[in-house]
Image (tube, rainbow, N blue to C red):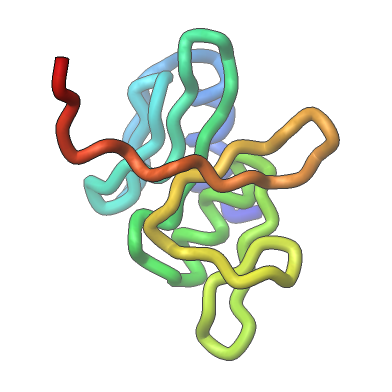
Length: 110
């Protein structure tokens, strides 16, 4: 794990703000180049995304901080060997597998 990832992970887990290089956290989310890649909800669940950037740096930050298993196979983003959409959000379930969340609705009508 890179030193930046370790520092950001510690701050994120402690709910503290920190900016190191191109990565920052406000204690609730982690941002890489201004794009939110990790988020913790009020129940403590941690969600992660590649934010559309299937890069080594994005995968290293998400895997190191959120404990996901993103990797590439033939330039395609994967989790545990299965191709995934690099824009989707994922949550690690109680059995340790990563599950994709449904897309956010574009509009909510009441």
